[in-house]
Picture 1 (cartoon, rainbow, N blue to C red):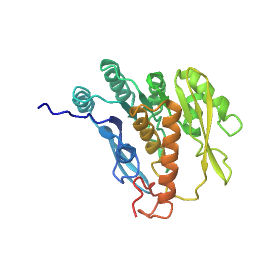
Picture 2 (tube, helix red, strand yellow):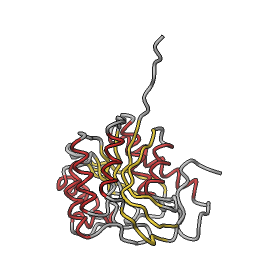
Picture 3 (cartoon, rainbow, N blue to C red):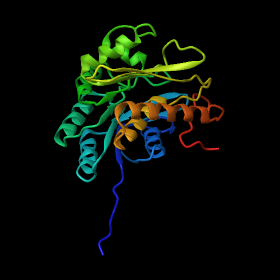
Picture 4 (cartoon, rainbow, N blue to C red):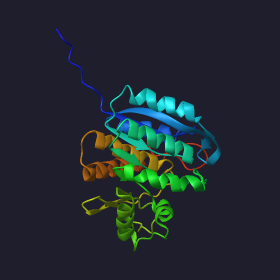
Length: 271
Protein backbone atom coordinates (compact mmCIF):
# COMPACT_ATOMS: atom_id res chain seq x y z
CA UNK A 1 0.00 0.00 0.00
CA UNK A 2 1.38 3.37 -1.06
CA UNK A 3 2.06 5.83 1.75
CA UNK A 4 0.36 9.19 1.30
CA UNK A 5 2.59 12.07 2.37
CA UNK A 6 1.62 15.68 2.98
CA UNK A 7 4.24 18.29 2.09
CA UNK A 8 5.13 21.02 4.53
CA UNK A 9 4.24 24.59 3.74
CA UNK A 10 7.89 25.63 3.48
CA UNK A 11 9.11 29.21 3.77
CA UNK A 12 12.68 30.32 3.07
CA UNK A 13 14.23 33.24 4.92
CA UNK A 14 17.32 34.88 3.41
CA UNK A 15 18.81 37.21 6.01
CA UNK A 16 21.54 37.87 8.53
CA UNK A 17 22.06 35.99 11.78
CA UNK A 18 21.58 37.71 15.15
CA UNK A 19 23.73 36.13 17.84
CA UNK A 20 21.40 37.58 20.48
CA UNK A 21 18.44 35.67 19.04
CA UNK A 22 16.09 38.66 18.89
CA UNK A 23 16.14 39.59 15.20
CA UNK A 24 17.32 38.33 11.81
CA UNK A 25 17.29 34.64 10.95
CA UNK A 26 16.52 33.65 14.52
CA UNK A 27 13.41 35.84 14.70
CA UNK A 28 12.34 34.69 11.22
CA UNK A 29 12.50 31.00 12.11
CA UNK A 30 10.52 31.57 15.30
CA UNK A 31 7.85 33.62 13.52
CA UNK A 32 7.44 31.26 10.58
CA UNK A 33 7.17 28.30 12.94
CA UNK A 34 4.68 30.05 15.23
CA UNK A 35 2.54 30.94 12.21
CA UNK A 36 2.22 27.34 11.07
CA UNK A 37 4.89 26.81 8.40
CA UNK A 38 8.28 25.11 8.10
CA UNK A 39 11.28 27.48 8.09
CA UNK A 40 14.46 27.01 6.07
CA UNK A 41 17.24 29.59 6.00
CA UNK A 42 20.06 31.05 3.94
CA UNK A 43 22.42 33.24 5.97
CA UNK A 44 23.90 36.33 4.27
CA UNK A 45 26.03 37.47 7.21
CA UNK A 46 26.62 36.80 10.86
CA UNK A 47 26.44 39.63 13.35
CA UNK A 48 27.97 40.03 16.78
CA UNK A 49 24.83 41.45 18.30
CA UNK A 50 23.01 41.70 21.60
CA UNK A 51 19.99 43.49 23.02
CA UNK A 52 22.24 46.56 23.29
CA UNK A 53 23.42 46.83 19.68
CA UNK A 54 25.45 45.49 16.77
CA UNK A 55 29.17 45.11 17.50
CA UNK A 56 30.33 43.57 14.23
CA UNK A 57 29.08 42.22 10.88
CA UNK A 58 30.85 39.31 9.16
CA UNK A 59 29.76 38.73 5.53
CA UNK A 60 29.31 35.14 4.38
CA UNK A 61 31.61 34.47 1.37
CA UNK A 62 29.72 34.76 -1.91
CA UNK A 63 30.59 31.26 -3.09
CA UNK A 64 29.16 29.81 0.12
CA UNK A 65 26.07 32.02 -0.18
CA UNK A 66 25.55 30.63 -3.69
CA UNK A 67 25.90 27.07 -2.43
CA UNK A 68 23.34 27.68 0.32
CA UNK A 69 20.86 29.03 -2.24
CA UNK A 70 21.46 26.20 -4.70
CA UNK A 71 21.16 23.58 -1.97
CA UNK A 72 17.73 24.64 -0.78
CA UNK A 73 16.20 25.79 -4.08
CA UNK A 74 17.19 22.59 -5.88
CA UNK A 75 15.64 20.42 -3.16
CA UNK A 76 12.68 22.19 -1.54
CA UNK A 77 9.54 23.73 -3.04
CA UNK A 78 9.00 26.99 -1.18
CA UNK A 79 5.56 28.55 -0.90
CA UNK A 80 7.09 31.96 -0.12
CA UNK A 81 10.46 33.60 0.45
CA UNK A 82 11.27 36.34 2.95
CA UNK A 83 14.38 38.47 2.36
CA UNK A 84 15.96 40.54 5.11
CA UNK A 85 19.43 41.99 5.65
CA UNK A 86 21.42 42.29 2.41
CA UNK A 87 24.47 44.34 3.29
CA UNK A 88 26.30 44.70 -0.06
CA UNK A 89 25.69 44.96 -3.79
CA UNK A 90 27.50 41.67 -4.40
CA UNK A 91 25.13 39.84 -2.05
CA UNK A 92 22.09 41.50 -3.59
CA UNK A 93 23.15 40.66 -7.15
CA UNK A 94 23.86 37.04 -6.19
CA UNK A 95 20.42 36.63 -4.65
CA UNK A 96 18.73 38.40 -7.54
CA UNK A 97 20.35 36.01 -10.04
CA UNK A 98 19.35 32.93 -8.04
CA UNK A 99 15.75 34.12 -7.60
CA UNK A 100 15.52 34.57 -11.38
CA UNK A 101 17.23 31.27 -12.19
CA UNK A 102 14.89 29.29 -9.94
CA UNK A 103 11.83 31.35 -10.98
CA UNK A 104 10.98 32.23 -7.37
CA UNK A 105 7.84 34.24 -6.66
CA UNK A 106 5.77 35.15 -3.59
CA UNK A 107 8.69 37.19 -2.24
CA UNK A 108 8.46 39.47 0.81
CA UNK A 109 11.34 41.92 1.18
CA UNK A 110 12.05 43.72 4.44
CA UNK A 111 14.43 46.50 3.27
CA UNK A 112 16.54 46.40 6.42
CA UNK A 113 18.94 49.34 6.61
CA UNK A 114 19.20 50.35 10.26
CA UNK A 115 18.98 48.22 13.40
CA UNK A 116 16.67 49.14 16.28
CA UNK A 117 19.79 50.37 18.09
CA UNK A 118 20.53 52.82 15.25
CA UNK A 119 23.46 50.80 13.86
CA UNK A 120 23.79 50.79 10.05
CA UNK A 121 23.28 47.34 8.51
CA UNK A 122 23.84 48.18 4.84
CA UNK A 123 26.36 50.20 2.81
CA UNK A 124 25.31 53.31 0.91
CA UNK A 125 26.14 51.66 -2.43
CA UNK A 126 24.00 48.67 -1.55
CA UNK A 127 20.92 50.85 -1.10
CA UNK A 128 20.90 51.62 -4.84
CA UNK A 129 21.32 47.92 -5.66
CA UNK A 130 18.51 47.05 -3.24
CA UNK A 131 16.15 49.41 -5.05
CA UNK A 132 16.66 47.36 -8.22
CA UNK A 133 15.69 44.18 -6.36
CA UNK A 134 12.42 45.52 -4.95
CA UNK A 135 10.30 45.07 -8.11
CA UNK A 136 10.80 41.29 -7.76
CA UNK A 137 8.82 41.36 -4.51
CA UNK A 138 5.13 40.76 -4.00
CA UNK A 139 5.39 42.96 -0.92
CA UNK A 140 7.98 45.19 0.72
CA UNK A 141 7.74 46.23 4.38
CA UNK A 142 9.67 49.46 5.07
CA UNK A 143 9.32 51.47 8.25
CA UNK A 144 9.07 55.25 7.87
CA UNK A 145 12.86 55.76 8.08
CA UNK A 146 13.52 53.13 5.41
CA UNK A 147 10.69 54.53 3.29
CA UNK A 148 12.30 57.97 3.43
CA UNK A 149 15.56 56.53 2.10
CA UNK A 150 13.74 54.69 -0.70
CA UNK A 151 11.65 57.65 -1.85
CA UNK A 152 13.85 60.62 -0.96
CA UNK A 153 11.66 62.65 1.39
CA UNK A 154 10.53 62.65 5.00
CA UNK A 155 7.64 60.38 5.91
CA UNK A 156 5.12 61.38 8.57
CA UNK A 157 1.56 60.61 9.62
CA UNK A 158 0.19 63.28 7.28
CA UNK A 159 1.78 61.97 4.07
CA UNK A 160 1.92 58.26 4.96
CA UNK A 161 -0.89 57.19 2.60
CA UNK A 162 0.59 59.15 -0.29
CA UNK A 163 4.08 57.80 0.46
CA UNK A 164 2.93 54.16 0.47
CA UNK A 165 1.22 54.82 -2.87
CA UNK A 166 4.32 56.58 -4.27
CA UNK A 167 6.69 53.79 -3.23
CA UNK A 168 4.37 51.13 -4.65
CA UNK A 169 4.16 52.82 -8.05
CA UNK A 170 7.90 53.60 -8.10
CA UNK A 171 8.97 50.02 -7.41
CA UNK A 172 5.92 48.27 -8.90
CA UNK A 173 5.13 46.27 -5.78
CA UNK A 174 2.75 46.24 -2.84
CA UNK A 175 3.92 48.14 0.23
CA UNK A 176 3.28 47.76 3.94
CA UNK A 177 4.41 51.05 5.47
CA UNK A 178 5.02 50.19 9.11
CA UNK A 179 3.89 52.80 11.59
CA UNK A 180 6.25 52.14 14.48
CA UNK A 181 8.31 55.28 13.82
CA UNK A 182 5.39 57.53 12.88
CA UNK A 183 3.69 59.95 15.25
CA UNK A 184 1.16 57.49 16.65
CA UNK A 185 -1.30 58.21 19.41
CA UNK A 186 -0.97 56.48 22.74
CA UNK A 187 -4.17 54.61 21.94
CA UNK A 188 -3.16 52.81 18.74
CA UNK A 189 -0.53 52.21 16.09
CA UNK A 190 -1.22 52.49 12.38
CA UNK A 191 0.25 50.48 9.51
CA UNK A 192 -0.70 51.26 5.90
CA UNK A 193 -0.97 48.63 3.17
CA UNK A 194 -0.86 49.73 -0.47
CA UNK A 195 -1.84 46.92 -2.81
CA UNK A 196 -0.22 46.88 -6.26
CA UNK A 197 -1.47 47.06 -8.96
CA UNK A 198 -5.07 47.52 -7.74
CA UNK A 199 -4.17 50.73 -5.91
CA UNK A 200 -6.25 49.76 -2.87
CA UNK A 201 -5.10 51.13 0.48
CA UNK A 202 -5.89 49.54 3.84
CA UNK A 203 -5.35 50.96 7.31
CA UNK A 204 -4.39 48.41 9.93
CA UNK A 205 -4.77 49.61 13.51
CA UNK A 206 -3.68 47.80 16.63
CA UNK A 207 -3.35 48.82 20.29
CA UNK A 208 -0.27 50.73 21.37
CA UNK A 209 1.79 48.72 23.86
CA UNK A 210 4.23 50.56 26.11
CA UNK A 211 7.38 48.39 26.15
CA UNK A 212 11.07 48.41 25.22
CA UNK A 213 10.83 44.80 24.03
CA UNK A 214 10.45 45.37 20.29
CA UNK A 215 13.86 44.18 19.04
CA UNK A 216 13.30 42.16 15.85
CA UNK A 217 9.69 43.24 15.32
CA UNK A 218 10.24 44.12 11.65
CA UNK A 219 11.97 40.81 10.90
CA UNK A 220 9.22 38.90 12.68
CA UNK A 221 6.44 40.76 10.86
CA UNK A 222 7.80 40.24 7.34
CA UNK A 223 8.51 36.55 7.95
CA UNK A 224 5.07 35.94 9.44
CA UNK A 225 3.48 37.62 6.40
CA UNK A 226 5.48 35.24 4.19
CA UNK A 227 4.24 32.31 6.28
CA UNK A 228 0.60 33.30 5.78
CA UNK A 229 1.08 34.04 2.06
CA UNK A 230 2.60 30.59 1.77
CA UNK A 231 -0.58 29.17 3.29
CA UNK A 232 -2.53 30.79 0.44
CA UNK A 233 -4.08 33.70 2.25
CA UNK A 234 -4.47 36.72 -0.01
CA UNK A 235 -2.26 39.74 0.61
CA UNK A 236 -4.72 41.68 2.75
CA UNK A 237 -5.51 38.64 4.88
CA UNK A 238 -1.85 37.65 5.29
CA UNK A 239 -0.82 41.15 6.35
CA UNK A 240 -3.69 41.57 8.82
CA UNK A 241 -3.11 38.13 10.36
CA UNK A 242 0.60 38.83 10.69
CA UNK A 243 0.02 42.23 12.28
CA UNK A 244 -2.35 40.63 14.81
CA UNK A 245 0.20 37.92 15.58
CA UNK A 246 2.99 40.47 16.13
CA UNK A 247 0.79 42.65 18.33
CA UNK A 248 -0.03 39.62 20.47
CA UNK A 249 3.66 38.65 20.66
CA UNK A 250 4.57 42.18 21.79
CA UNK A 251 1.84 42.04 24.44
CA UNK A 252 3.08 38.63 25.64
CA UNK A 253 6.65 39.90 25.91
CA UNK A 254 6.11 43.41 27.26
CA UNK A 255 7.03 42.49 30.84
CA UNK A 256 9.70 39.88 30.08
CA UNK A 257 13.43 40.57 30.37
CA UNK A 258 16.34 39.46 28.22
CA UNK A 259 19.72 41.16 28.46
CA UNK A 260 20.35 44.79 29.36
CA UNK A 261 18.88 46.54 26.31
CA UNK A 262 15.88 46.20 24.00
CA UNK A 263 14.44 42.72 24.42
CA UNK A 264 12.57 40.60 21.87
CA UNK A 265 8.90 39.98 21.33
CA UNK A 266 7.53 36.74 22.78
CA UNK A 267 7.00 34.61 19.66
CA UNK A 268 5.48 31.58 21.35
CA UNK A 269 3.89 33.17 24.41
CA UNK A 270 6.53 31.63 26.67
CA UNK A 271 5.86 31.94 30.39
